Length: 130
Image (cartoon, rainbow, N blue to C red; front, top):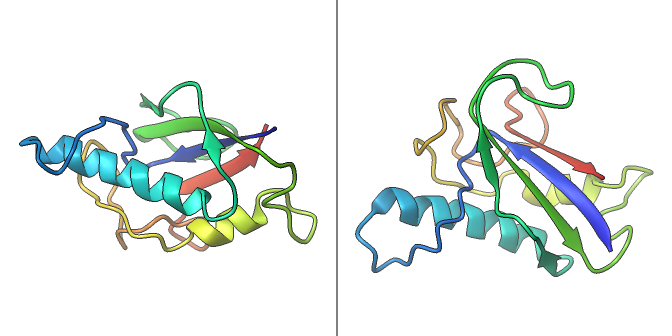
């Protein structure tokens, strides 16, 4: 199984909240997690052992700056499912770029437009194979 890491400034806290719950923050956090997971699952089933973890301060892995961010690691059932043009995550970056999200939750960064951005000047999500 191939393993991947996503670092994002979008609040993808997994809360298991349902639309019938009264806490709109938790509902919207869960919706962001669902949107991310469903977009990944366009190509392969996803398995994970730990939910996304919120962190603050310096962004990890050579990304410049400081911000609240979430780190999530997951596996997919097939190797090279996101491989294109020699980049092991190119198809995943393409699939996720522009996926709408709900902003202004527990993130401290303005997410505008309210979407996952994996390329361009407003990148808010980084993906790597591990």
